[in-house]
Image (cartoon, rainbow, N blue to C red):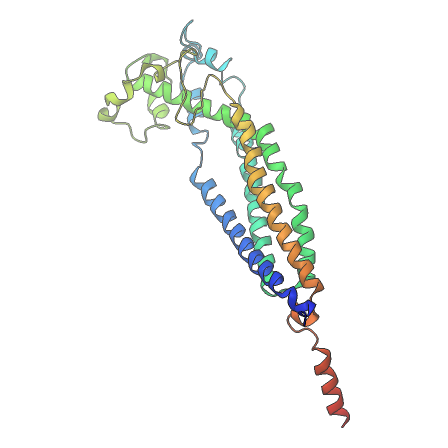
Length: 292
């Protein structure tokens, strides 16, 4: 004899149920991990660029025909720059992405509850909301490429220029070109002492001391060169990141949740939702007993 249809699909439904439950829980955990990573990779901010602009003279930034902050950047980085706006633009993608991560985490927890309860009607609504989320996700790499990346590059250049200038001062060069040296150095060294200022470790590599030569290799450990500015990967990487984690993996998870919802919708009522109607045999028996 053949197996009844509702028993044939039981294994498939159980597999989908377990897979969707695990996948949803892991994706919620992924949002927590991304949030922690974002906090751990906090930028140096704009304190140093502001100190660089306020604490150095225009002549110092102009330099000479070989070494010049202005030639490295293409113009005076301190001319008409609102560093508060730069900071806001640089963090725009992170802020919007952080809001989406919290929203996604809450949505995944709610969906997980519906999966555990095998609530077909609730999952039907959840699937529609989940399917609409990529329309919000795609805005993050767009914001990063159009707004955040240029501002981040400018902020990083300002930070690198500050450190070059600070090393120049503590190494005893061009000291007359600095305005209020103690205040200037406070953005780099909290309480500069004679021992700290005399530390030779700051004066080893002339490429990174004082006004830079744009022809030198000035890349940092991340590959950023202050004389180059926005790197192509700063524009491309956000799209790769979001395609992998917020489109591909996310879409696969949503497809599994949708498949589970379809299986639950086609299963017998009492197998899908808690507190559902009793089987027909039980209802008939109860009716006959009451009539007697």
